[in-house]
Image 1 (cartoon, helix red, strand yellow):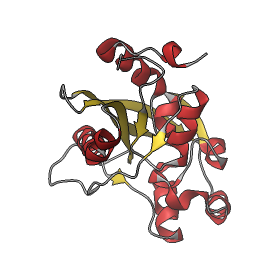
Image 2 (cartoon, one colour):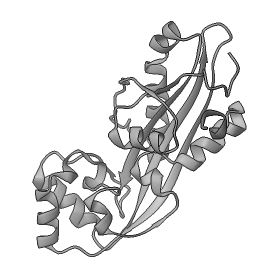
Image 3 (cartoon, one colour):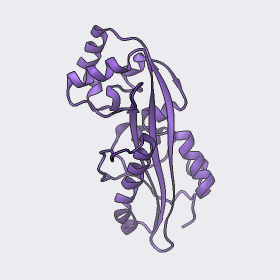
Length: 211
C-alpha cells in the first residue's frame, strides 16, 4: 500500500473529543481506538519526557490490533499536560471542585506551560515500523481571576475533566489573555507540527488525503 494514499487507514489512539475534532477540521478520517498507558510520572521524570513516553506507549498499545486489521496504517497518539507557573508541578485533571479552584488560583494572572507529546507510528505487518516522537511547548498567560469568577467557571462543569482545570476551546478561552506558540497544542494536538512531521518523515501530505 502506497504511503500517502487515500487508502492508508489512520488510527487515532485517543478518545479525546478535542483531538477527534481537530483531526476532523483538517478533513482527516480517523478510526478511534482506546489506548492503554499508566499516566503517572516516574520519579524525576521531566514534563517533556513524560508526555513523549506516554504518547509512544499509547501508540504502541493499539499497534497489534491495528496491524491485525490492516497490513499498513498510521497510528497517532498524544498526551497533554499543564505545568504550573512556579515549581514545575504537573497539573492533571482536578479531583473535585476544590482541587479545580486551587489550580485556577495557581494559574490566575500568570504564564504557564502546556506540553503535548505526540507519536506518529507508521505500522506495517510485514516490513516493520517507523515512528516519530516529539514534544511541543506553548506558553499560556491567564487573566487575573477573582474568587467569584473561578467559582462561576467551575460551576459550568467544564474544568472537571481538563488538565489544569480549564479548556482553551470552551468557556475557558475567556480566561486566556494570550498564547505563545501553537493554539491547537493547548487544545490537545499541535496540528501544524504533526502534519509537517508526516510530510518530512513519511512523505505523507495532508493534501494527498483531502479533496
